[in-house]
Length: 294
View 1 (cartoon, rainbow, N blue to C red):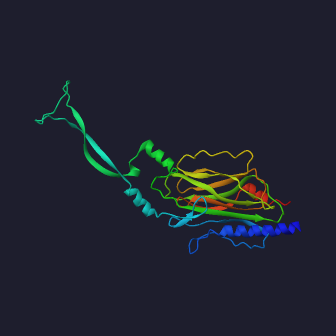
View 2 (view 1 turned 30 degrees about the horizontal axis):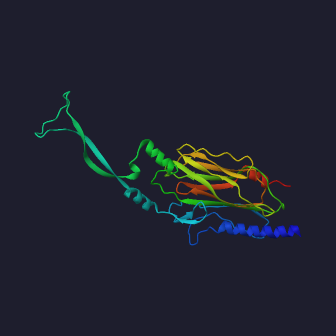
View 3 (view 1 turned 135 degrees about the vertical axis):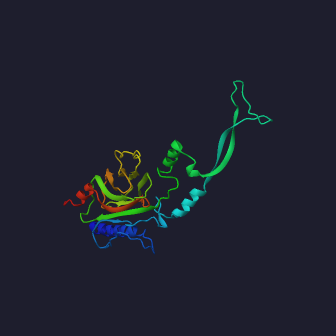
């Protein structure tokens, strides 16, 4: 009877995961997505990814880190905003000081005395008014990308369930892999790849909330320092990688201190204006674990 109840509860879990996996779909959208249909009567759902396969620069909505839909600003509007955000710059020159008769005034040493005079004022874009270390500092505060760059955050959803062994998988190590193509027109910068949502459950329907360590794809930039995995807590970590425009870059997600689970839905957020997903798969340790015959 206990096993029957667990199977019924697990079936409910699968239903919840199916709704979660497809609930973020955008009605009326013509986007090309990679999807598979889940049969609620299955006891084993193969690892499946749901993500956009085309250029999403024209998308009007995406998901923020909380998973809620948000409006994306049009890139042309952002460009206008950057241009209209101006500062006044004064151009000065040293002009010879003259007396009432128009004669140049000299000092005790016989040198012509001068004074600074504003000869021109002009409006400049605020983004261009700083240079050198000030500009670099500004870019770092903007996440390592130019201040007039507009990101478009999108989500790659991974989901999997295996009730066939009536228990949990307790592997650690390399969990998931996502391969990006860095867009040819992506500005130099540090582009976050973040774990925005997790729904991980055990056979006994215990829901786990792991520590999340996010990563990035650094395009012609140094990779920012990352935290180490905690020594005892269940954790997921996205490992940062460096790349250039046009490169193929593979991000791996590691798992540590796994308490054991039989199903999950995980959202990974990335900037689809800078990168396009070309492949997603199980990491080597996850792949080895789910193919083990007990």
